[in-house]
Image (cartoon, rainbow, N blue to C red; front, top):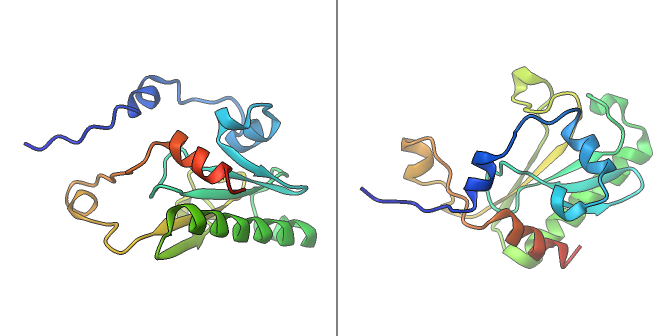
Length: 158
């Protein structure tokens, strides 16, 4: 049997995963961006790392306002969010050299939103061959870099 070691996961395994209130609003109110993995703040939105990433470097752009539909975004919020999407792509390109990206929003629980009451845009870097037998056979995704290392790498270019 092959063993795949991921010692940094023990912190997550042992942690209390139930958070009071909205995880995004809590991160926005926090004074500790590093602890909350907030990479960048602007007037109307912010960039945060996904704590349960599909791939290393999986980021999210979140509006500062707690809203559940892009239809509720003011024009300046829409513009600000897409400026941060571009900033995210540029930072990931500089530090991780992906071959492509997936961008998207899951609107509503039925559409796959894990957090359905505060919209956010996912930015997922992709590499040729980044899916393998682990994801297709064992429903397991291997993330090759610890969140803290990815945070420090991206924070340095934001």
